[in-house]
Length: 619
Image 1 (cartoon, rainbow, N blue to C red):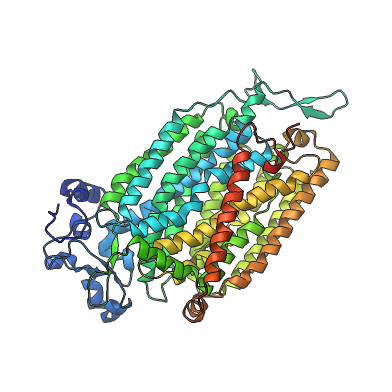
Image 2: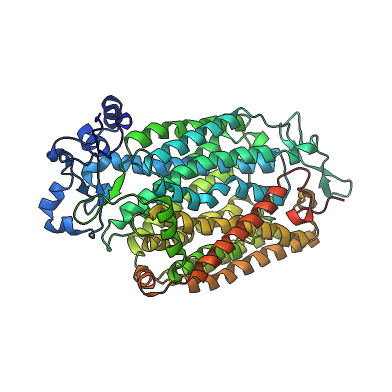
């Protein structure tokens, strides 16, 4: 460990106990001296010369960052000098421990972000049988904390804890997530909605009439369809924890990325999201094999309960607390002369934020990030019922194809990283959007009209569309780095991703209200079980409207620069006006308030029937 001396501003001694840090590093098959000097400081200059070998092999390596570079810093004394990130940044050979800690953040986020929502299909649609519009809202509410990334980023940037802006928030976030998951694991589900066949163990969902037609069976516990609210809240609280950790990791990612030379910029973000996608793939495989019992719309006679799965996901959240403390390497912004940049006060930071919000370039990016999911996300509420009742997708198949999709999504991220870093963002996003809608429309239409009703056929389109989805996702994140300045990375990442994340609950609220007007009701499972030709046409019309909104969202490309160079040009040459800030704040505040009211009303048993919330009316 390192003793704090007067005037030192490095990490506190309690974060760097030598024995535990050494054990963690050795467990990762690394030399402890390659990580501990970065985390805790060291009195020898030799151990701090992380990039000396790179500089000897490449004399220009030390010049790959600008004057306002990112440097590692422990106690700012003559005995421990800061060291610049080299050309490979956090992926430098002698920073392997830091790389492991950095990637572990995104792997764990992917593991829980993919795993906990992965239970929603089997629990809420299979076990509880909630209405379709409620099911659509569950996914939005359970991931609602992503909409608060702006505020978490602001706190990250303005309120350091013991001199650190990222690591303590990672530790707190993972602790909160673990506690929420443990509480969820101790909250039992009510009895299932449908009656259970004593012989087969499957749900009795329909009965056959004398004329050969089908109608919905009477449920044994109809009240269970209204019991999803408290489980959704606990899922949301778990998400709150890992989002706090993710925001801190995003701020770290932006700091690393800004230290990259222009020809490599984008590598850090792409690697981070590839790692997160791998985590999602692992969690999908876990859900597919261990939560595929017949109670959760599966086919196995055995499996873990929802409560047991929640406890399993609490374990990696617990492990991430010490990993965040001892392996994550947090750089500090420094001036060109090697001096440390002074921390901004909250008031100074708000002033800097307001200057950012007044920027026309930033305003355009906010409009793109917000309007694209708002317009394109006004989707039909029929999707889940088509999947479970017409395509016959079981939980195992759903998770298995999610796994394949995540693998292809990771491949898509790699493809963008290697082949399309310099391709026009407009062209790439337009091609991927059109391809996505055409492929989805083909598979969905054949399923709706009973031409082909097969779970593997229906889910095949989800796999085919993952590569263009990855391109669409990663390109939309590149512009964030170009908008950030040293010291406000967490804020920029938070504000821009918050503007995008706020679009989803707002769009879901609008979607619930728009598709309520389709009759027969798209949210009533009985209509899918009876499966009349007239209702098929109603469902197809709702999907057609969804595709129309998706194509309409292409108009928002007007607000997105074509590439990194144009983003920098906008940022440097476009002016600032207070009206841009006022519009941004008003727009996001209204969207958040409206979306929250509608979505929360749809989760409360006494109000979910309201037409305003997307129900069919309470009379």
